[in-house]
Structure formats: C-alpha cells, structure tokens
Image 1 (cartoon, one colour):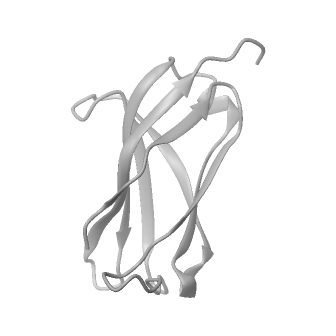
Image 2 (cartoon, helix red, strand yellow):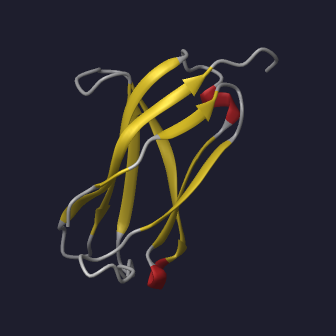
Image 3 (spheres, helix red, strand yellow):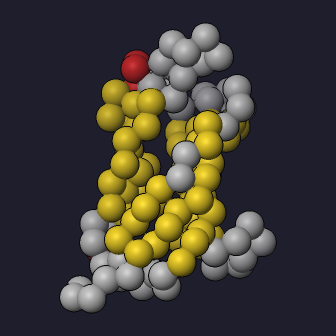
Length: 111
C-alpha cells in the first residue's frame, strides 16, 4: 500500500484536528483492529526537532483515524512549511506509511 499524498494547513496557536480513512489497494477501508499508529512533522526530512501529532482511532473497523495537536503545541511552531507522515503498525509488527505530505503553518496574530 503506497502512502496517500495529502497536504494540510495548520493555524498557529489553535487546536488542530484532521480525520483520515485508511484504505486497502481495492479502496475498501483497512480494518485497523489491533493496529497502533503514530505521526509526526518536522521542518524538513532530516530535521532533528519533531512535533508529534496525537493519533486516535475514530472507527477501527472502517479504517478511520484522527490526528490532533493542541494549541499549546501549535503556538510554538514557526510559520512556514513542514513535512509529516502517518504510520500504522499491525499486530504482527508490520509498519506501513499510509499518509504523507506537507503542512503549511499559517501565522496567528492573537494567541
């Protein structure tokens, strides 16, 4: 399964949330029962500093998961472009990148 390319926009100093549906090659939802997930973003692929998204499962049987980041974290981000990815790991340890792309962090005035 190849990672789906998807770019995001995040506003500095706000709570961020986005939902994804992970799909099999035949476009049916991937049953995420027994899976774990992780996601992070960095200024560029080799940057040492990373920002973790919180990943929760909205509906495992339908392949739905949610990324969130609190305003406390988004308020520390410098404006600009970042890269991110989302990985799921099956119960048997197979790790797969399911979503990847860029995040545009837009500046805030009042936060």
